[in-house]
Structures are given as C-alpha cells and as structure tokens.
Image (cartoon, rainbow, N blue to C red; front, side, top):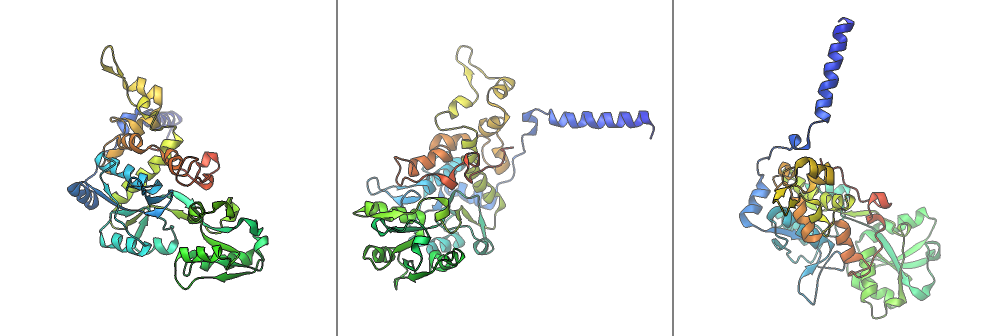
Length: 374
C-alpha cells in the first residue's frame, strides 16, 4: 500500500467513525421487540401482581387508617404498573405473611415478582431466581436499652444478645464478634418470632437485640417508651450486607429487563434531576401562540440527549423493552424518582425516619447508581 493509498484509507475510516459519533439521536432509536410470555400474560389480565411486605414500616405495611398497603416497595411496584399499563392502581398486593409463602407464590407463577425484605445472596441467585438491581441496602443491627451503656461493640463484650431463632443474626453475629475479638452469648426464644426476641430484651433477659436494622427501628417506634431504647446508628454498626432487590423467575429475559430498567430508571431520574415536579418542564413543549411543537434540535439543546431518551415519545428507547418510548416519564409523574420515594417513607415526615446513608446516590457517598440511559 502506497503512502497516498494509506492516507486515503485512514481518512475514510476517520470520516466513517465521525459519521457514527455525529449521528443524530433519533437515528439510533431501537426497533421494538416481540412481546414475551410474561408481558403477554400481563396484558391479558391488565394487572401486575407484586409480592411486598405488609408489616414493615417504611418498606411495606398495611396503613390502618386508609386500609392501603404503602411503603417504598409498594411505590416501586406502582412505578412498574405505570410502565406497563399507565396506571399506578393496576397492581395487586397479595398478603403473604412469610418469605417462604411469598417465594412459593413466585415459583408457582401466582405473582409476577417480589419486592420485599429478602436479600440478594449467592444461594438465592443460583436457585432458579433472577435478581434485579438493589433498591434498598440494609443489614443486621443492634438495639440496646438506652440506660444500658452499650454504645459500641466493645461495650457488648461478654454480654448477652437476643436473636431470632434461625435468623441471619443468629448465624452471623458470633463470627463477626470473633473478628472483633469480642465474646457474646446468644439467647434465642423457642419460637422463630421477632416479637418473642423483642420481649426478651424488654424483660431484661438480654443486654441487646440483633435483627435487621429497619425491623429494629420499627420495634423502637412502636414501643410504649421508645426513648428507653437505642438502635445503633452508622454503617459500621451494621455487620452484614443485605441488598434488597426485585426477584423474578429466571425464565423470561424480557420481563427481567423490564423490571431491571424500571428500577434503574427510578435511580437514573434522581441522577438526572428529574422529579415529579420538574418532569413536565423537561418534556417537549408546544408554543401556545402558534401551537407548534418544539423542534428536535431545540429540544435536545434545552434538555440534553440523555433526558430526551428518558422522557420523549420520539427519542425515548422504551420500545427496546416492549414498552412505550416514554414509559419512565409516566412513572415519575405517578410516584416520583427514587429519592422522592425514599423521602416519602424514610424522611423526617415519613413512616420511619432513617438517614439515607448507603441508599444515597453514589455521587453523594452512597451505593445507589444507574448506568447511562442509552
């Protein structure tokens, strides 16, 4: 190859590369894919069936005043119902009283997915289940009596800790204590009831109670004397890592992708600064005088390509999932982004005030992060 020929070849490659990078956003819109079995079944019944907690403040519980199931898990299910049907009410929440009952319902096909306090673990992930992205990070924590003086792990050395029989706390706390050169004695009730372990602490049969941290905060809030108890605060006081994530059957890739990207979309909306209040100002506008819609170039210049792919009926890429192009716009209008949902249930005015910590966006020091929407 001569120098002249080589120059022409390299120039053509450069022009070709530039043509792809300069390609307008609408030229990259994906082609809709065929509807899979789960989505087909959902469209036939026009209702999502979602298994959530119904007894855990903040996450999912039955509101005694309204009679409705409310919580972070519930709002995420409603966001999915909007993505599927355009209606946050198009979802049913069966009242499963245990994780085992909920899991059997999922495996039998009675529910479409679970979003509840069941952590993503290797064992669960390799048993025919599909986990979506984490939607809540938590772990096993410690509650003590406020007048007991135990504020750190060292304070618990040679003390007694109540745990629920068969729980994660029972299986994990001793190994963690040993890693900190601490000796503990475990006390577990004959039943596998958290209420029984809680009563042991109240009656002074142990120096501390260990369970999942949200559960501990709920027990404290519902106590007749909540100021008499202290739930240790801070990431270092949680000795297990338990990400809660949506759970699906591992038999329909399209359905798994719909759930995954709807959950990620709630986080992505917060990353992009799209809220239930601002979302309508970020969609394509129409000139009220001329009734002329905003041009593509003007719209992209105003909101940016990533927000356009997220919100616009033309640039949106929801068709790749078998959904409407702007499905996330409707979900955000209905329930807000992840930060709004968290604040609603765990904020100062929420059901169970809890500092976001690990559940903050990664840019704010937390673990919540969503890939680019493209």
